[in-house]
Length: 239
Image 1: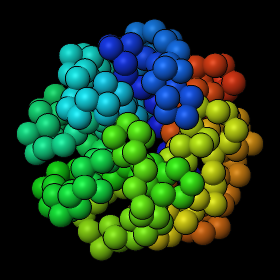
Image 2: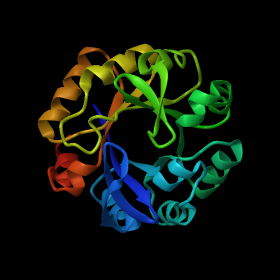
Image 3: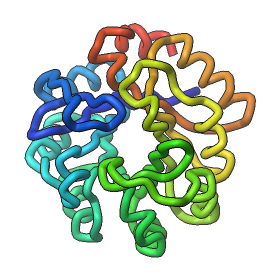
Image 4: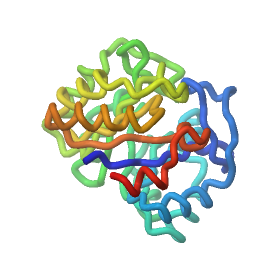
């Protein structure tokens, strides 16, 4: 069974969604705390948060919002965006965050990421443009294949891999399922598919493919909820 991760992208304290990671495309949807309460109410066990300001600036920028969510809800939070140091990780864990997502730093200093995974609940965010890893808020693409990067975490303490096909993100064109399966197989980790989720058929197909390949994982749902393409409450009732 796929775990559903409702998503909140934070920009200046607001819940927003982007198109293909472009900050100028940001659409503001409202108060992230209110969304977090709603997600908890309808049955979500996890909340996926990206600090967009942090991703672009290289250090966490939305602590107060995160603190409000972790203090006043019981939903488990995984967060990424600008987390570059052990101090950043510790600060989030003190707020009650359940899992830390390392992205750019995991590529720039993989030894650091692996070391942190031995001490803290760490996921690795692998975001890809044309199959290659993108970092720094998706502004820079490195000359390393996402599947090879995923494979390098196979025998580590990393809890999960979150894989995003940037070309699908915010487009409502459907999750890139073959890409997600490849990342899951290469890493042999719990795999959370992200980028482009659009409807219940997409969910069922992803679920079938993961089951066929004996993959444990989840899916991040963002814009499809905010743009009312899917009834998330009903979805939680049926899974």
